[in-house]
Length: 165
Image (cartoon, rainbow, N blue to C red; front, side, top):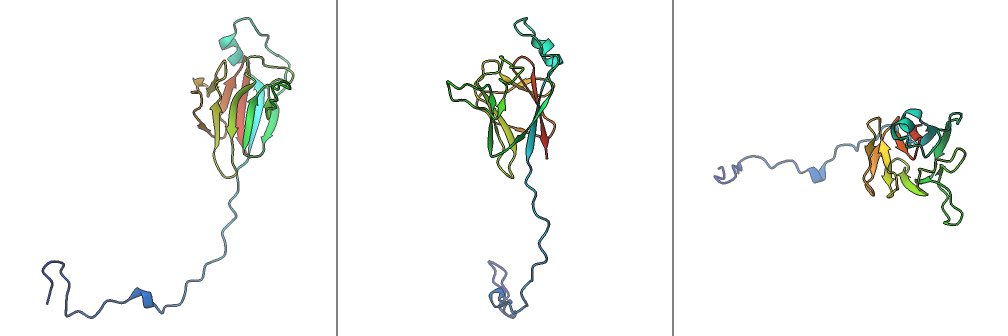
């Protein structure tokens, strides 16, 4: 009465066929809260400690410069210095007063697609892009994911702090 290979019981009643299930359909409950798309802002400020670590005497620290808060709109933002002749218009423009000449024209790019992570990629800048208080140098062309409160350091004195909204 049993199959020696698979153990099937030939005398047992047939199994319930789920394809002919007559139980009532499940009614979905009310929709959950809408998924909130995270948006980002970049706070740009001069950082005296960063400046002092790399001061070679070629730049003057902008002592009275205020920080700027820049909302990151769209899906991508360029960090750099404006150049009309090269048609470069970065979202985070570090050619504004006080201009940080240690920043490349096209220094780094931020990717921030709606609902996706915020990442930064160094574009082969002359002086590099550094992350965090340990000033970890980013590798050219490699995207690094950022979190709320992360700080980038670039140029002679620029610190960019990212804020989730």
